[in-house]
Length: 326
Image (cartoon, rainbow, N blue to C red; front, side):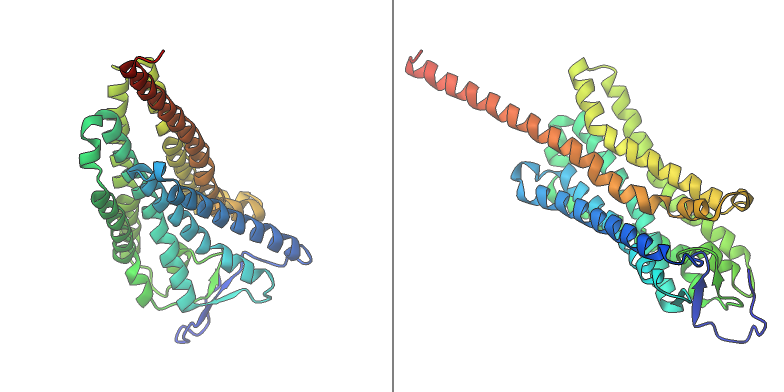
């Protein structure tokens, strides 16, 4: 890490040194990154539009899913435009305000992701464990209140955790990553304080530990109920809960990669692998969500159409019986 010789000099921009010089490959990287970013935005937007258009999907679970898709677009937008802009830059500089703005967007999306999954797991818990009270508990007003609470909670967790970074005095401007990592920013400050360690612990506690415990409690109770039900109900529960469990598992894999990225082990890995590990969640999670839930959505719609046809046939048969038609 390079420190500036004159610590009194005001830092107006940071250099993202992880980009390096890729030569003519920058055109290939630009096309790949642009294609992946557009694919993420299109996939999540299409899923939102399908839920918006199909009245059969105007249910709490799918409203919460729309919020999750919005967050996936937010996650991607906090990173990919910066990557694209830096592909054709020689200095790879980003101004201090833009760096702070990116950091806020990126770290707000983390608790929003976990809290959205916690809200969805609570919805599944009510649906499976208290089906007769589902419409009363998960009414539209409460669902939108939960979504609002998710974003307020996520925003406050970032502000309370990292607001001190905005007032730091920096003695260096070289960030060894492709985005503005708050840990690397703190290392560039002229004086490292115990406050930075406490802020990391607090952020992990409120953005990961608390939502994960809520998710765990919901699924433990679902598992307890499923053990006492029929095989058909067990299959339905597995089908509806699998996407969320896969999403949570992938998030923890990404968190592990993030912790590895900050350790000494990284020094023994190739430069390209280090970069991929640091942005793993931004690559996989935004595309995993529409893929998992889109596939499950298709099966749900087929099941719903079958149930509607069965109900229609039963009603038609009942009318025929009343009229004496055989």
